[in-house]
Image 1 (tube, rainbow, N blue to C red):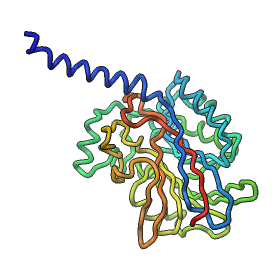
Image 2: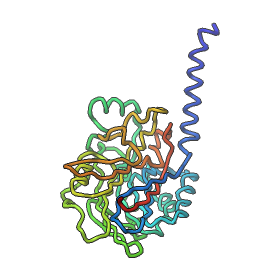
Image 3: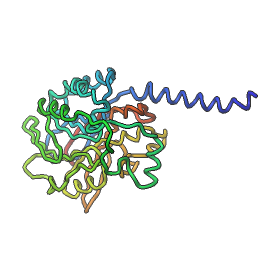
Image 4: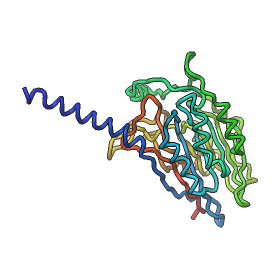
Length: 308
């Protein structure tokens, strides 16, 4: 009898322990990654860029809020927010409060689908099924009727009031101690709100440095940015795979990007040109799947330096 039930009970115990770790520890184990990217013109002083992404704020997440506020101590030159700030329609005040100290610095933002729409309960196995079918999450479609519409306008107004630039299918320029940085942004490709034709043509040539900003790193967007000559693109959305296999990595990206580039710094080539791509694993989760495994929540401090 002991042998008959011992193995199933052991598997159940291991699974329960893993779930407890993934939800109770790793999903709250916030950390900062530091990355150096050689993209600036020769002779230009380094720029320190803090990227925050996929906060997915839910009311009462005090540890996350304290950690986000603490990032202001890094004193970045500017901040880029790559979207999906919300996972709760009541979360806007807590997002704005948490990012308040960071909004003392120059910054810019794009939105993700979860800023516009509330999350839905989904079977995590569907991500694997959709990948096998060549589909990706919402597959380019807005959520169906009946979903919660998040108060993204309040979020936008709060960011705008702090002086952060709204990069929704448009361009902006930040001035950082005499250095001009041109930012070209897109709305979320995951729900087909991107309008690259409205910003096409590449860097204007009037700024010291130019880069692209988008929430979801779909290949069509990366191809366009790269072919147009942007040396760096920042994105989020993937959660780094969220549930990864140790020593193997992510199984899905929730878009058409390959899993080898699901997070961190990589390169992308299109039409004979190559750009650096940085994908943030983000610091939150969908409120219905509040777990991470082998993929801790993060923000990234990118130090941009001159090309060799």
